[in-house]
Length: 306
Image (spheres, one colour):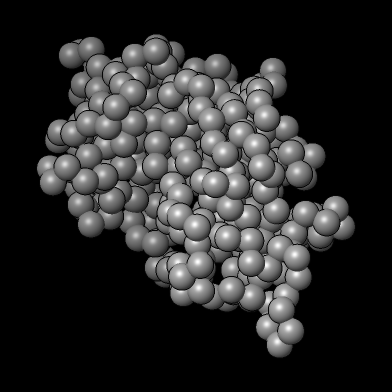
């Protein structure tokens, strides 16, 4: 099954942080990359707050992230979308899938899946299909899953190139609504991108394995998939992916957002001319958007030196 992902005439990109703490440097890389690739083509750049997982949301983090983006000159178009206010949309999407016979109730606990999984896939134990044919007597539904086909799903990433995943053996029937009642990331991101007209998704390579599921969901819901660009992961001094434990941008940036921007652009293969290094964030980003060359973005993870 091959998928041709592409943007329409007007590019619409987005940045979608989770408010589990302040913005960190790895997220700043994704924000800058998505901003520049959208603005390079005269496109729009949206911001969405992915706050569905309420137990992990840190109070005030969303506003802090937005203030940090503004301090770095990353100004978005339109209003900020917040997933916590869109649960009706996700429920409507589930009903469409249910009407097509594409989803089923699952009574399995995590422990049961681990015990009966045929093998480990790209993101842990692969669901063995226990409840595909209906729940056993006395069993109560916990999660809602999407049926996946026994075939390869292929697509071409704008940076990484041709990709292929056999959904059934890589992840199995995957969750759309969790046992705690929360909607799953895979469903929410697909519904929100389609609703906002997003046709270009630029994000970290750690989400590359999720892309086939999202493209398949697009097909099930009748949406055209965006074109995907997966940026190399920025590593900290310990060789691990940069995350909040390595420090928040809002703390590290201090009075030097232009310095951090220039380092992030250099990491993305877009070195800033010496004469621009001391300019304002807005001027740096204007230069970067006008000169951004995706072919120069590294394909492998690397250390983000500060």
